[in-house]
Length: 309
Ligand code: G3H
Ligand code: 13P
Ligand code: ZN
Image 1 (cartoon, rainbow, N blue to C red):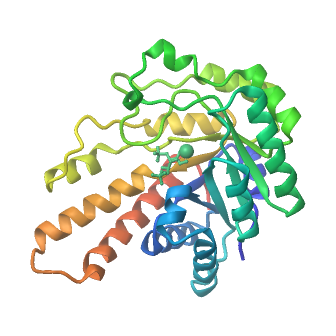
Image 2 (image 1 turned 30 degrees about the vertical axis):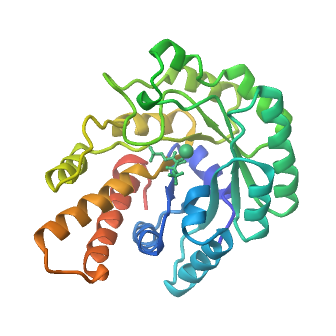
Image 3 (image 1 turned 90 degrees about the vertical axis):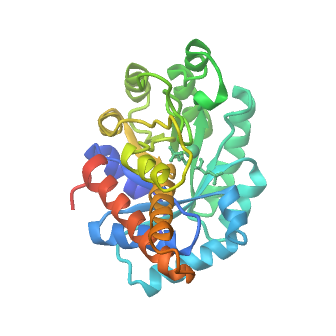
């Protein structure tokens, strides 16, 4: 059975570790995440972006697939199904009506007041249906966005605004911007996260679970393996794992990871196909790819997020 994420986030907040949100994009991927989390006895939030939802034939299909897999696989750990970066009320409503237990309304592109109004609207509907809501304040920008370091930090979350936002919206958790970004190109030089800002936000709203998006590390080993087998991912760089670990000490309760699983899967498929040019049964390369995701998930849970079985 799918659960809403409240309890797991509260436990993470009090225990100073991170609950993982692993984004999912297909069945093999979902199976890998569920298998690893069950082995680790770790709760998990399965994130589904709008794009991933469309790719998997709609949110209703995703909910049915995840529900059936949790049941057939005999999964006993808490699993939440979460809309990632919902852009408007309608899409959140579709997920809530379709069996998701958690939604993110991402109003970060809007002005403060508009973000509040939109988030409040989603919170009212979601709470009436037993679903929890994550919102976002501040903007995530990476080196791909081509903005200067100063302009980038101007988009970071303002602590006083974060406190006002949570108070006025009643949101359950808050995604903040402190220097991470989505994808494989997060920093050009030294990685930098604004830990002082994070601590100040946590000081003002200590009860609110904070969420770190763009938390992939872009492990050099996996980038190198992609490139070795014909990939072209030059200059990719993520958030060092010790920074993610530190963030969970300062109020980050939920850590979002997608890119690291993409890289693990792609590196393995590239390697497999190069080494087995005669194979054409997709199960031959998707099986090892699934195992690569499983290993990455286990590594994150044990070595990065601070989870103890
Ligand atoms: O938040 C970003 C996630 O990695 C989802 O990315 O929109 O390409 O599925 P996507
Ligand atoms: P990464 O691209 O760093 O994996 O971030 C994923 C994310 O934040 C999903 O919401
Ligand atoms: Zn995100």
